Image (cartoon, rainbow, N blue to C red):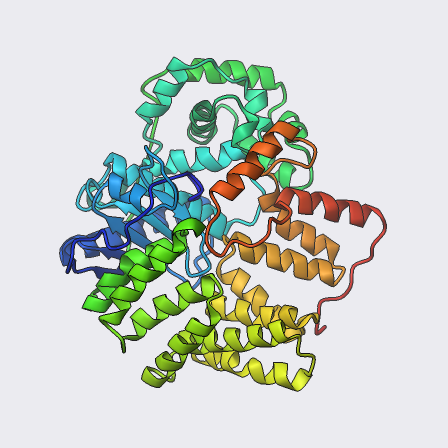
Length: 524
């Protein structure tokens, strides 16, 4: 799964064994959290860096400095993975999400550490392939390709002397193809989200098969690239398929024949050397170790109905480490999430006494000051300027932190004014750092719209838009069902329901068609 919105069991956030010691292995692009050994932690971080290098070489993606490494949380088992998620589920082997605190994935330690090519590693590589796509490529991609890309590269094995095998067949996809009625490729190519087909398992299977066929064989060179380019040039999914593949029925027949072949060709890529770069392993303090499960839960989400219990248990843990900045950071974050502002002010005030130069504490202090002015409906510009000073101080200490840059931008929207060029540029810098983050993408698109930069707004929101239904495509029955589920599965801190990315795109395109003119970027 790409995101965490599958259901799963409520985490007893203290479920980690009492006194369990966590350690981190930090590399250029990853921070591995594990209760495993130092050796296994280092080896996994190195393997992930090599995998990142393989994807970068194959795709031609540029190597850029990464100021927000992906957090990889390794929990003991698949059951433990499911226990980190906010609502009941089964069968989830691992998941990934683009949280503003930092993109992260949760995976089972069993079967990954020390075992190249295991099913658990395939799941991990699948999720990291999603992250790689969303982080490095700004285009709009159809559902089948998003999943097919992750499946195709998810089975990558990096062997002796860094000889890398790509495109190893997936047995579970063969099973789906054999056990289910074939979905016409015309439907797969036009699917905008999972529910646009009758069988999501076949969408995965046929998407994988199509990526494998177009990437490994030489039967249709250049057609996949042409198809994706046509979509991003504005063609409908259906028109792009016809333009790139010609007779789609002929492609369907070729794929049916390809599905009957069990020993598909793979690509063996002999790299001279895949340098993982430096890896630093650190054993976390008792406070940091005790708080890892709570960190995961804050990123994954806490059910609104269970938040009081979560906050009580978190408070009990923090009480054992009253002066630890890491503990105070997690507690402040939880209190801010549900707008327990008085409690958060007390926590942050103590935190700043303990660590007056901690940028996280300064950020939260500024956010609380801004929120106080918003609630009081203060209009004095000088007071708003003063309230932002803590956020600016945090930014000086940690200048590339997306969450701090976002907080500065939001201080102006809370005031009810259009953010100035400096705040807009900060938001764009945050988005450049975390382009995979859906929240930042929406904010940037909304900012462009507020400045009548409609072309930029449309280009920004488009990659998200085709993962949701267009307005009018959902039946009244389905809408009523979704509205009911949104109440049942409400997360703590969730705001009012907002328009989907697809609805935003449609509205922006209608506005542009109505003759709205674009303005120059702020500050130009």
